[in-house]
Image 1 (cartoon, rainbow, N blue to C red):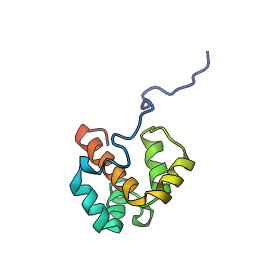
Image 2: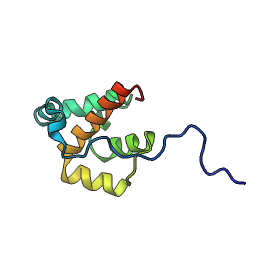
Image 3: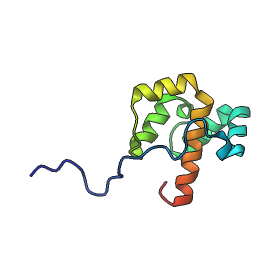
Image 4: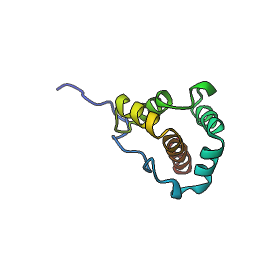
Length: 104
C-alpha cells in the first residue's frame, strides 16, 4: 500500500475570511488602505520573510502552501493584481486568526 499523505499534515482548507470581508476587521482594513506597504512588511515579518516579499502573489502562495489552503498560483496572481489591498488585508486577518487559535 502506497503512502499518499504524510501524517500530521493540515487538511486542505480555505482562508478564514474572503478577500472582501473588510467589515470583519475594520482596523486591519483601514490600516491596509492607509499603510499598504507597512501591512506587507508586517505580514512578511510574521512569516519570517524579507519585508520586500510581503505583498502580492509570492507571499500569498507561500502562506497557502504552508497552511495547505486551497487555491493555485494563477488564482494568487489574479487576486493580487485585481484586488491587491483586499488580499493583503485578507492575509493579515488570516494570520491574526491563526495566532488567536494557536496554529500560526
